[in-house]
Image 1 (cartoon, rainbow, N blue to C red):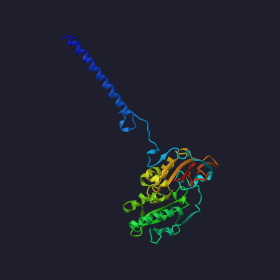
Image 2: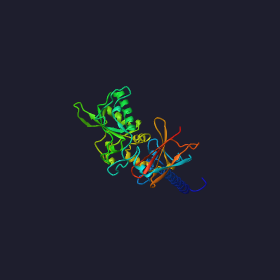
Image 3: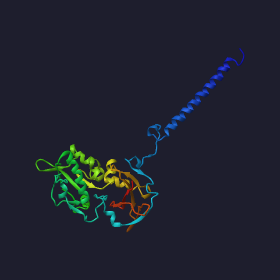
Image 4: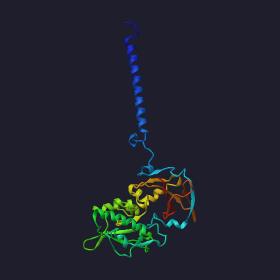
Length: 317
């Protein structure tokens, strides 16, 4: 038989096989390394580290970006004192309330009944007051609770109080509920049983539980789970959906300016833009978006009680 000797043919065959094996190994290595560089955290090669790529888009239904970037705007001038007033002011042992006596506090008496004058809950006294916006929201929440479960065995024990500038009650935007026991005594509210409904649905009415027990390390307050605070929409919904207390939410908002506003659509279908503007001194110029005719969109501005303003704009559908 002609051609190369058998040992040479075997030698060359082995070399070719080795080359194929090496090429295959290289190809597999590239494939593994390529998979490790993808966006799926589970594909990270063991032992390697990766920068944290988390962002606000991980939060429920929050979209950030140029939602207002192509919309015309005008400026409104905000006085420095407004930092301490509004529905989102944070009051704590480290941030005293400086907003003065709320001018729109009313008696809680008429809000303890539904529209048919059915009693929804008890009150400690008709002299307990709070802002009408907070009481209206509480009334609607408790009316819906009563339609499902009957009158709540709860007493509205306190509302506005100017006796302590480090207490939430100084804002006038909150009320505190306690359980009414069968012997007439009261005990701390706890959202258990049918009362879990209140904790799970308060956000629908613009309310939050101001001091949830699992956030006591952040709020610095424990044992006051019955404090309901009115903050309005979309703030209450964003906080509830993302398990944020007021302190955490205000920290979040500080990362969003007019040019990178939060865009949020509530369960009710309303569209909002939310952004932050730091106070610049005695007066701060804040951007407010306008429509094609130059009219400003409906907006609200609240101070945070620490150095800036939260602007909430209702956007067209």
